[in-house]
Image 1 (tube, one colour):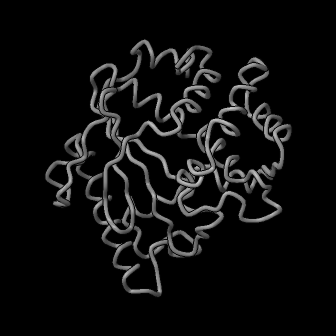
Image 2 (cartoon, rainbow, N blue to C red; image 1 turned 180 degrees about the vertical axis):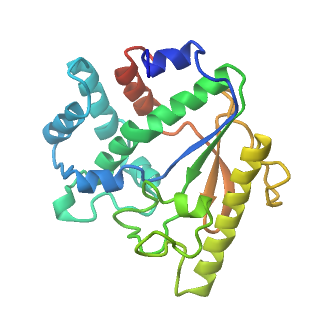
Length: 255
């Protein structure tokens, strides 16, 4: 039973204070924007869509501010960089603002809450290992879906045979791509095993990648980035203003 607003509980330290490994994918919102018919072509349509995903108690000023963040606060260059391989407007039936809509939906569903919780772990001095998965699996459209929700799961569980799926997301007719998928999956699964056993992805189960996964801190908000051509670190504060607005609207306080 959830007895209080989770945002309040986290902000005041009322949670089990154990290390956490948490992350999201680059294109968390694409599949939802498509399946929910989130096709928008104007500011009015975008605002109506934003309002639809919040409780009626959220002030109109918050809805306006969030709409402004995603339509005016993000430059076209920032939108394209945030989308990775996904095109800002890949098909007419997805709407001319598809890319911005997908960013909003992914942030609102997953990314904003993940960032807030990671910040709270850091605030209370508890190790938090944050990641961004940025690999487009096999048989997935890079232009419309990209590194979408759930894309990381076959890699984490090293599901090299595609068991339980209609397609094998780690398969490829190109030997180089297949080898890269397998290497990435091996690295990720061993890091997860390391964390489960040792509460650190850098412990004895992890492969020697030559790259240490640092804990997320409020002074150094670092994500591990998983790409099929290798691992890297990034500053995990992108879309800071927009994501803060989302958390404020959801929680009822300035996040």
